[in-house]
Amino acid sequence: MPDQELVDRVATSTGLPPPVAARVVEDVVAYYREPVADYVRRRHAHLQVYGGRNDEIYAQLAAEVGERVFAGPALTQRQLRRIIYG
Image 1 (cartoon, one colour):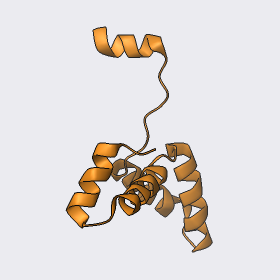
Image 2 (image 1 turned 180 degrees about the vertical axis):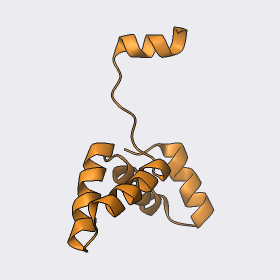
Image 3 (image 1 turned 135 degrees about the horizontal axis):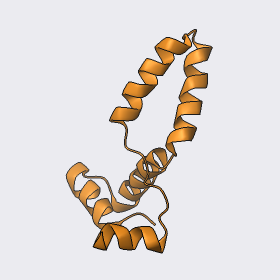
Image 4 (image 1 turned 45 degrees about the vertical axis):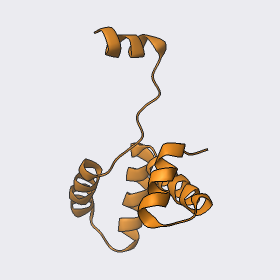
């Protein structure tokens, strides 16, 4: 279930009915949930299919990864405590 506050905001700002806004939010979140390693492998294969050379592909991937939002890693309780308390 997507974040209701986000669904409400999307519905209000776009005029979409709430069920449609919820589906849009779910699709976008799923798109950005892809781990960085999976994204890099997928994009590399895609760019190679269209004749990209590795040196060009690596430069493009570096730029794309720098601009794209990725899901954060899973954190242990210890890591969470260190973030909070230092």
